[in-house]
Image (cartoon, rainbow, N blue to C red; front, side):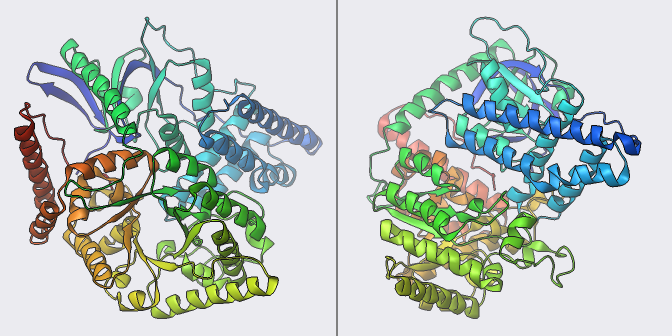
Length: 634
C-alpha cells in the first residue's frame, strides 16, 4: 500500500539524501529545481445582502468579470505557439465553454435578482451546486472535471475582487542553469500556461496537493512533457520557498534539499533519461516484435481527433481505442451526425489504412452532459426512476445501456462511424456489454444504420467489423455469445478491475485495494485472451495495464498480441517487447497462475525481470544495472 503525502527521511548508502514526499507521478522523468510556492487558490468571499436598487450594479459587476476572464482566455489562446500540443488550445476552449455555460453565467445573475445577494456570493452558491452534481459521478475522469469548473470560477472571483488574473507571486531568483518547480494546492491549465510564458524555459515541473492523473492539468503536463507529482497533501507545509527539490515522477516522489551525493545521482539519472528518450525515438519505424520474433500490434488510445498526431509520432500500428464521449462533453448541443463524421473521418484518413477502433458512446448518468445538450435531443434520464440522481451510477444506465435507451442518439453515432469507414479501416467497439440481448440489439442497430445509409446512398464499408469490450466480469465468464456474434474483443482493464474487486477507484478510502495483479483479475484477463485465441478472435487490452511496463511480460505470457495505450507509453513498451521471449513469458504466466497473493505475483514478476537482466548482462559481459520494481500504477 502506498501512503500519499507522508514525509520521511530518504537514505542511501552514503547517508541521508533528504526528506521525501510521496504522491502520484504524472508524465515520465526526473527534474531538479527551486521550489516556488503559490498562494492558496481559495478566496475569502464576502457574503452580504444588497438593496433592490443595487441589483443592476451587481449584475453589471458580474458581467464585467466574466468579460474580462473571457478576454484573458482568448488572449492566452492567441499566444499559443503553432507547434504547441493540441491539448493546450483544447483546454483553453474547454474553460471558455465552462465560462459561457448558462449554469454558471446565467444562474448567478438570477440569484442576485431573486435573493438580493452580492455577485461573489451568488457565484459561489452556484459553483457549489454544480460541483455537487460532479461529486455524484463515479467515473474518475468526469468526476475530476469539477476542478475545471472551480478553476474557471476562481478566475472570475479574482476579477470581482479586483486582483490579478493569476494567483502566482514573484518567483525566487534563479542562478544560471537553475529551473523552477511550482508547488501549489491545485493548478489550472491556464495557470500553467501563464507561468510557462512568464518563466520562458525555466519551468521544470510542479507539485500539487490535490489532483489525479485524469485532471486536465495532468493531461496538459503529459502533453508538455512536464514531470509532476500530484496528491501530495502536505506539500506546502513540508517545502519552503526556494528549497532545492527533485521531482521524480517515475517513482512518484519529491526529494527536498538533497545532499550533493544525491544530487549527483539524480543528475546522472536525468542524463540517462535524455539519452534513453533519444534512443526510443529510433524505434518508431521498427516493427514491433518479441526477441523470438513474435509480431505484436501496438496501438494508441486517443480522446480527440487532434490526438492522432501523437499516435503517428509514436509509430502506432493503429488507434486501438477512440473514446468518442469527449466529443459530446462541455457543450450545449450534442454533435450532429456530420460533425461526428468529420471527426471520425479525420482520424481514419490520418491513419492511412491502419485500423481505427471507434468506441460508441460510453456515457450515462455517471458522466456529464450539459442539461441543454440532453434537452436538445429530448434526453431526460436522471435516475432509475427519472426523479433524481442515480443511487449508484457505476452500475446504472451507462454505455450500451444508455445508447439502447436513446435509439436516435445511438443511430446518429453509428451512421457517422459507418460513413467514416469509407475513409479508412474503421472498426466499431461497443462498451460494457454483459447480456446476450445487448449484443443482439447493438448489432440490430448497426444493421438499421446501414439500411438508412443505403437509402440515402451514402458510402460506407459494409464489412466494418463490430467488437465488444470485456469490462464486466459476467462478460469474461460467459464469452460464448461474444465469440459467436462479434468480430473482436477489447479488454477494458480499468473497469474490469473495479467491478471484479467491488472497488471504487475514485474513493480514496478504498483506492489502495484497487489491485491490477489480484489473482481473480488476472484469471479473468487470461480466460478472455485464451478463449478468444482458441476461437480465432482478435483480443486486445486497452486499459492502463497495456502500457504498464511491469505488466507487459505477464500479458504477453497470457497470449496477448495486441496492446493499446497512451501514445507516450508506446515506444517504451515496444522496447520492452524487444527484450522478451514469448516462451519464457508463457512460463512466467503459468507460474503466476498458481499464486494467490498479489505480493507474491509482484515478487515473481520482479524475479523474472532480474533473471532476464542478469542473462542479458552475461551475454554482453557488462556490469548488471539495478532492476526497476514492477509498477503498481492502476
